[in-house]
Image: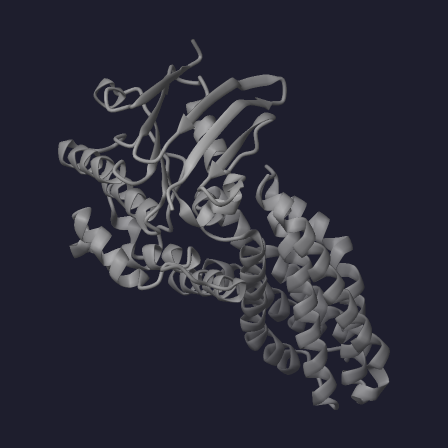
Amino acid sequence: MAITVVIDGVSRRFGERTALCEVSATAKPGKLLLVTGRNGSGKSTLLKIAAGLLRPSTGSVVYKDGTDDGAPELFSDRIGFASPELSLYDELSALDNLTFFGGLKGVKGSTSRAEALLKRAGLLDRADDPLSSFSSGMKQRMKFCFSLMNEPDVWILDEPTANLDDAGKGLVYSLIGEMRRKSALIIATNEKEEVRLGDEVIELGR
Amino acid sequence: MKSSSLAAKAFAVFAKDLRSEVRTRYGVGSVALFAVTSLVVASFAVSPYALESDAQSAFLWVVLFFSSMSGLSRSFVKEEETRTSLALKLSAPPLAVFYGKMAFNFTLMAAVELIVVPMFLLFMDVSLKSYGLFVVAIVLGTAYMSAATTIVAAIISKANSKGTLFAVLSFPVTMPGLIMAVRMTNSALAGLGVSSSVSEISGIIAFTVMVTVLSSMLFGFVWND
């Protein structure tokens, strides 16, 4: 069942510094909520709060799927998240990484799912190579594979095209096109090309 | 399409850590290096003198304690340093991570003991009289050390001076179990049977359970901080 993410008056302070102030927005299934704003405006913080990786100082994030309402942590198996701050295991192969995380998320047939994603990302021929031998762009593609292992109902991406060449950007845009048909998407970016994709755009730090 | 129990997820975390360790050999290398070096140096220093069983048992656990200090924190520190903790937080419930890491620490320490204990018996010229109690002491002592150091490792992985802090915080937490492990080992070396150490055995089991339960309750706050 599709999930709607309701962000209501979310603020976050780190000590004396306020990183995010009173942000409200809604990410609906089939829609792309786009978060933009200058560096340090709190985009990454907001995405981490939306994914349940960080607690807001005030306000709330509620996931609603028609039957249950609750905090993001309760829906963690249905969230896909990719960010520059996230890394996978360098010493493990691409396939081992994805099957490991797929197993943790309870994905049945995680090996075939991982292989399908690696093929989609153009990395299937490197499936058995350790991530330490991958370029930064290839690692970025791996993050997308990681975030899609559980076929998420909420897909959260922080600066998705950073480190990617044109082919990589094309992959991201085509994945966004597919995912926005069924999932709620939240993307933080400052790329003008991506900002135009948003159904709803919120600008932080104005 | 989705299924998985807590035990299966904990095992997945354990298996992942084990696979990483087999590929990098970082943890076992640093722990074993310290243990073997200190054993060899000490055996040369004291070889002309016959140590009493209480000194021998204390020496064994001092080596095992400081060896574990040099490597058991790695499982969490590495997750933070390489920024893989975020992916793990997104994918696994905190308890699965805790139990998986604890199982890995136990296995790592047990692997090191497979090298260190025979060397200890050989180099220190130990005449072991009660094998059963000796094995019980090693297994229970290792279980306690693993349980106690796993939560400390999770706490210090967020700090700046990780190495120093790990030893300082681990010392009071591991002390009750260490004392009982030393006593059991002493009894084993003196040739006393399992029945002579019933209070130590039940004590260390109780402490291990208590530390594990309290750590499980605390871990979620530490991990999600």
